[in-house]
Image (cartoon, rainbow, N blue to C red; front, side, top):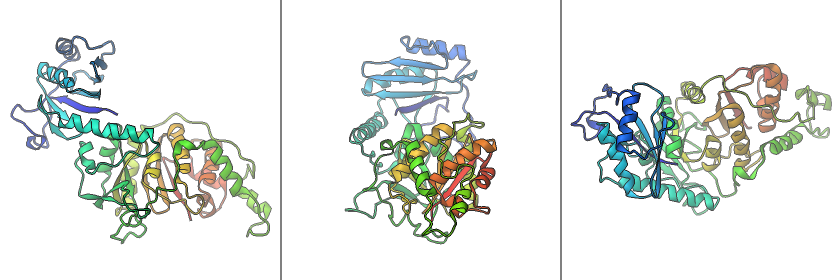
Length: 410
């Protein structure tokens, strides 16, 4: 987690981003060689052995200089960690030698050499997040989430969980439907802000109360942590439960039930190997957000403090798979593994639905069968109540090469 400030050229008279025309294009800072020479003059102690990513160490802070690989250099992002107001001295020495202004990305405003409010706000938020992590608790959602973002938020409110004493507010919800562009911009800021954006679908498209989100039907008290669970073990356990044949209480014969999961039957095949992404994961996620909202335009924007989209589901108190297991952290653990193996990204979630973009989907029927087995273990209703024929093989054929995974629990 870092405090990020951007060095860029802006009109001399500009004191705020609001004074800059929407069509303004900032001039480059200079050629790569000139910019590196200027940095060396301003902060000679900086390590520029990697000319795209410099390092600067202070007595109580560290600074990364994200210079990038473009030539000329358009701007420089500074990622600052630690404490101590003296860190502002090299920031403004750099701004002076590069003849540019300093933008606090968290506040979304230009700052002056003695302006420390944004730096102090970041430290307070960081410390609360660290404390929560040490206590194995979710960091609190800021009272004004927009202060952690460079992207302006639409009107919205904090949602109080409808359980316990009613004093837990894990979710911020927009008052009106979201846009794909807003989701993508906030998603791009996640590494710095710690806020994960979710497109939140409603139980009823015409429901202004936006159930379950707006009504507070979000429950955290009985949930564990995603880190408490081993994904492969969970999938194997669920597979065994869903493939068990109960001849006394089953509409299908044993042969028909085992045919659903052919060629594996009751044998758990193990998890599928990870794949190299065939597309940029952020681009795939943004495209899917646009497609999702085209189909579900009533979806609102939600914000949750979470390290990833997988963990955001638990942090938000979502309970979609409750008819199978009411501990969402188990499902988050599996999705965290999918994030690494398949470039999955949690984009949207409904009352009992989940929608992921996938940068590295299976591209062959053989690979898709293994992934389909994981999906069946994770959400058997995708096969049991999907499209005919209700078999793993048919499901695998439908998902081959597809860049989104959608789940629905009855």
